[in-house]
Amino acid sequence: MPRISIRLFRLRDVGPSSYPQTMADATNSTKLIRAVLFDFDGTLTEPGSLDFSVIKEAVGCPKGIPVLEYINGLESPANRARAFQMLDGFEAEAARQSRPNAGAEEILGLLRARGLKIGVISRNSRSAILTALDNFERIRTSDFAIILSRDDPFSPKPSPDGILAAADILEVPVTQVLVVGDFVFDIEAGHKAGALTAYLTNRAPFQACSHPSDFTLEHLGDLKEIIDFYAPLPPGKLPNDILRRCLAPLEPELSPLLIAPGVGEDVAAIPLSGEEVLVLKSDPITFATDAIGVYAVSVNINDIATSGATPRWLLTSLFFPVGVNACQIDLVMRELHEAAQSHGLIVCGGHTEITDAVTRPVISAQVAGTASRRELIDKKSMAEGDCVLLTKKLAVEGTSILAREFPDHLRAAGMSEVELARSRGFLLDPGISILKEAQISARQGAVSAMHDITEGGLSTALLELSTAGRHRIRVHLDRIPIYEETAKICGLLGLNPLGLIASGSLLISCRAAKADELIGALRAAGIHTVALGEVLDEGIGVEAVDGDGKPALWPEFKTDELARFLSEVGHRGPGRKNSEIESRN
Picture 1 (spheres, helix red, strand yellow):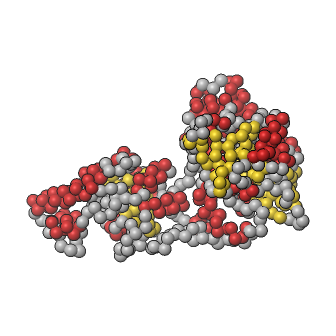
Picture 2 (cartoon, one colour):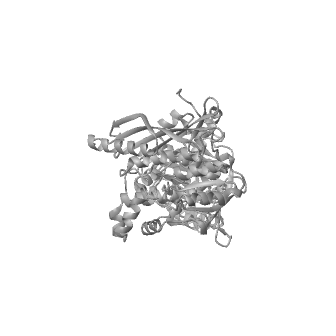
Picture 3 (cartoon, one colour):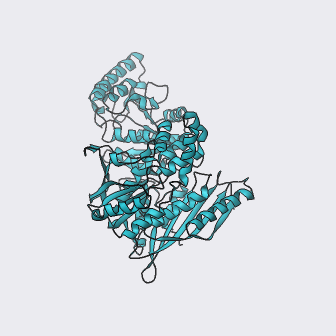
């Protein structure tokens, strides 16, 4: 495949930037942001609260000399004290009148949610900063890991001393600190310290600066794009908003595909000769060691089945850590072969390697299937009024993984041996395959879309289905079925079952007139099925209603609950896949 040079996204043309222009640039980028230091006045607060021309006139500071440097340079201690007293008074009054800058509280909340350390480094007094923070509604002093003011024993900006000290206190390399400010001193201090810098214009003309900033922002909300690309990502699959941005440049090249990559699209569909369609799917397994072959086969054929195609061929790339023996590899291969045979798949190739790039077995599997154009189910066929069905209960896969990987943890938390055994058995009964219900549904002829529930659980799956189907979805909270074992495990571990990985359950969008017939056919086959909700008008989004039909909150999960738990307990291999990106290659 020829090398693709793509622009990931376009920064507003307001000044210098170092966003990656090509995929190679992004791969080679050394930028990594783990902490953000904000200037305060004019950055986190609205600009203009302090009129420096008035302050300078009051303290006798000549034009062209910064006020702090002028006051500190006064020879008479009495004159210095008097000048600082006047400056403190101006700052105190401005702080009482100040208001949060547009987007400040939202971006601070985002940074905290992403686990980044945040701080303030200002030429203002600490008293003025704390007074101004009282005017914030959702942010408090305690939300900042550090607040440095002119009262601290460091030379003020443009000296780098405070930034270097903050990085040391935060235990973050200064090269991984982003300094955000609205004045040239902020940029110069950050540059001298070796930190990354972001110049906030507040939509005003540029100020001349001897050191160009790494990023330029018109608005504090623009900082989200920088954080999305340069802050560490949470474990699990790539967030959908970033995935959407990364895939956008590929769209012109993908027009020949019947189903192309996108958020909520789990397969690629390629037209062959006549009416035949080749359907491709790829998914890695990185979080489990027990029954890894069963997972690899099941999660890949699931998505092939949701397109209405018949899974036919399997290729696998197997990666084992250094120290593995031939017996262990043989066990995985036999497990893969047996799982493939049980679903009528032919293992037609692959690769096996022992490498220090992994610390536990990893399987990357690819499944190919075929369908006729008439049989192909495209999620873009969803229409307003369709009924949304759910098979089985939540969450088969997450329940089984937690019981298999953490039996001692759950036993200590109060899970009985019988409950643990039942939960481990979920892998095979009710099972993580949705092949049977997908095939039954496809034969009914009234299905407009099907979607396997994987990472991010039901919450994320419904949003992905809405995105791919280009219609909003309403879900009835009182109809959501959850296994007793799942509810207990989630309760013991502090997890939300709506965000727990749930392969084994299938979302089906079908024409309302045929919904009862399809539910009957699935139940007759022994598959628990409920009418979960309905498709609304064109758009993207999920809304929830309670048992009385009143609007209710619907949770969103940036990270799957299993991935979050694995990360918190330090388990290796916390995420499995990015189910939408695999069909690019």
